[in-house]
Length: 492
Image 1 (tube, one colour):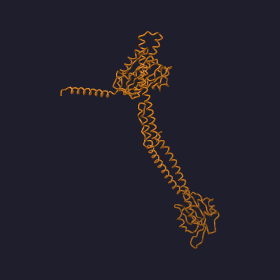
Image 2 (cartoon, one colour):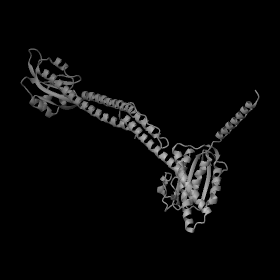
Image 3 (cartoon, one colour):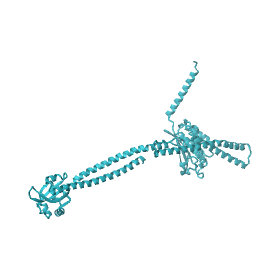
Image 4 (tube, one colour):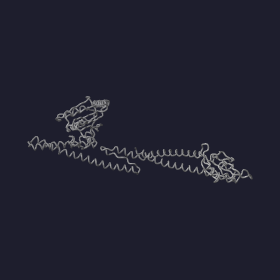
């Protein structure tokens, strides 16, 4: 998962948890506040009604909106009923909802005994919070005073509607805040991680063949700037180290060529012009073989030094079948008992390549197969649409599977006890890969111990249209040159 998405999800989840906790707290506190507020308001209005200081009509108007009330006359003052049935038989004096029939006997008894009560009742399927109190009531000025029961009911739907609306508003607020915050984190992370992406992209362009690349250093003095500076310093040290190694390899190879050539020359002279003893002859043969091996190693080192220095091959249209034929003619006479076979599905397999370099690739692969003890080596050319496949198949000892991933690494050699391929310097296949890459292709290997190996070189096929265009350009250039010569030689 990308770091930008991780930051957005983590911080978005964090703010969602915080906002949800705040929303729940607000809901709970609001619910408690509404319950207490409505209850207090109802009790204050009920207290004013029962105090007798406020007319009934005015006291009823002070009740919370949409509340229920009922006033029952129970008899003359001083005569208080003792049974719930007497309360239910009271005379309704003022009401907008009949509450007494829904009060339980226990609640009614509490009202008659304690003079007040509170509880929850169900009125025609609606939950109502009811408060009751006993007091006296003067029906008219100067008239008799009677005992009355004052009941006030608050429908639960009032609070429920308010709380439901509050819950919807809080949920919408949390969602909007989460989306806005997540979007802000996403945009901010792009701004923060943008320089890091530039550093990563620039670092990906750095390779062994191009260590001059440097990552951009942001102007802000932050950790990303420190990272860029550190990477650039590391690349400076790496470039210096590689340059030193490359110069040493090139210089040492140049210096070694002369003594190695001299050794080989003197050994050849002694073998041709003197009559050494058998023991001396064996020693001279060993010296000659080792000098040849050292000469090849020096040449390989020079080749890799040129590759590291950015040396490129010269590409021109060529027929790969001709390269295969040339390799067969050169190797077959010295292959001993190994049979060299060349196969091609077509007499023309054109690529943009360097004849000498591609010949070097095939010579390395074929010689490796011979060294591996192959009895038969087959070189096959197989063109397909946009690519040409060049395969070298042998029936040698094969290559261990654990060695295949490292086969093209420099100085890597397969265990000689299991494969004759381990007798070289370990540079031939590295040179093969470099030459193939210079041609825009790739090289792969498949092998099994005891069954042989298959090296496959894949090269881009030359487009016929490009060949015609190239030929046209060459002809046009030749014509222009001829015309220029004629004009220059014509008299003025």
